[in-house]
Image (tube, rainbow over all chains, first blue to last red; front, side, top):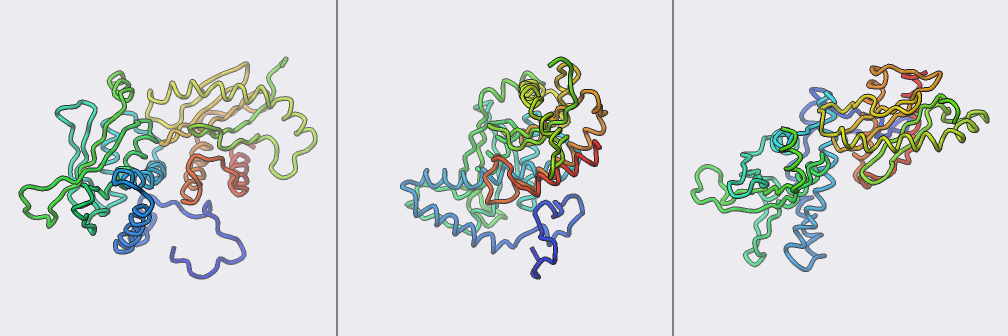
Length: 205
Length: 151
């Protein structure tokens, strides 16, 4: 990262690098610049945009990009706790995603985690200011494109990796009474679990 | 096989395929002829035993929070210990036989250190997730780790 000089006699391998964890590195080393991320992300969106035929295909592409990140983040964050445990219950896993993972990725917990009233297999993670869409304005003719699909892909990757396969979609929902947050929309990540997951969870608890 | 022989076989299994395999009794750089011959005769049965324990790991996956699943299967005098990571990658270690009896804490320690090595590998963004690990460096380190714990 901040190593500019060439490594001396021994070549530096990823296996030599410390993996981080509680208090082992300063915050400045663990965080990346927001403007850099936004710039890079905008390039990712544009790259995919030129290679798809429809808006939903663009969202799938962004999801696929995030999916691999989710898988890696799951393993890394779990390792960093150093307690060598896995999440086995559905609620704990959702908590892990919406608080632990969210804090590590975005510096704050998700604004809320809700269970759908109509469908028992659906949960919603709500964030008022997701970094992937904060600096993006979607043109009106883009049919409700949600550029937060990248984050929904990450959620999907984390859940899938941990053995909770789910279909995760990102939606931008207009806020009716705009008070403090300057944004007119919030991002809702709709998590729909596979039937087998709910069955297993009911069986376990 | 008339009697169980010593074995120390590590297999890391991803979601679809084995990612890494190592016979930890053979030394990394220059296995002796005897070791080679021994490993050849044992290999088939050992692999069979290790892979047949995979189903038991799947079954145990949601019964405990702990990644370390202890001994999941016993065949003759050989035992299979397993460690299941957060991303459901399985570390399987076949051990037992005459010379190699290891207690649970040794194996737990080995798995936990192996986990640190394993976590770093997929962090390389250019490497497809869940693909076989062919890194020499990784191989060397795993063997060094095994030496530290089991020698």
